[in-house]
Length: 297
Ligand code: GLN
Image (cartoon, rainbow, N blue to C red; front, side, top):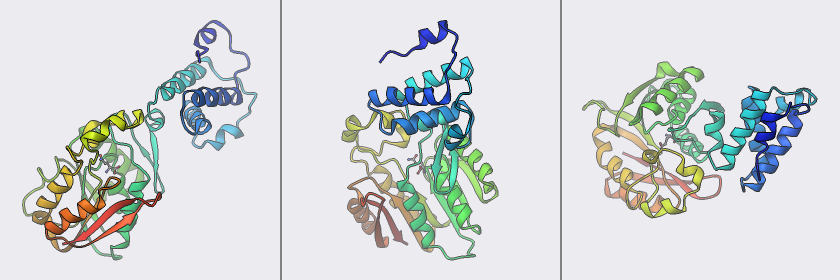
């Protein structure tokens, strides 16, 4: 489908309203094979018009004539989405549990599955205890700031190898109001954690895509940072590394909580057992896929 850009440049836009744009965007995205095309069209227009909620689009006067710059921005962003650029990188927002977090190109987009990692881990924590927590590969800070919010006595050290991620994570923690509970540190896993510093909980959603899986990844996923995706030949490198190093940094009677890729749970359980972790428990995600392994140290 050819974008009507030329005609937009050349003609005075008379009757371009919220309604006409939304349905044009929906049709364009549907033809490009994008799932949930109306939702995407709404989200992109919400972003362009700086509305807080999608429903605000429908509350605005549908006969309102939009500015040429807004219309052009909408067309060009819909076109980007049609080329499989992730919606969250366009709107620079992502929902996670009760939060709306900032995200942008170069930083891993949090997934709903990770909510299971956070909620199952939170269920293991007791009220009022001053837990010290290490979040490895914090990305947008979604795990760290959720734990800070729901376990208000916890203190979290959140590490990432990427400066970009650490900047966004810090911004998100500040927006949620939990930045005092979190210290952010640039570190490749445990590399820059002081020797002798120990934690009651180590939590991570590490990169876990195997080399052979890359060719079948959706284009949207490929737009995300390689370092946040690639988990070595069999996808399990980070689990082996974390399980090997974690004992140096864990207190007695502590927890190691890991998100795993589809089909990896049993292998990760074996890595944990061989590393002398006890009572590994597997939890399923929203699509009944084994997704989280929590073990005791
Ligand atoms: N901790 C972040 C998340 O779970 C980033 C994960 C990653 O970069 N692999 O969304």
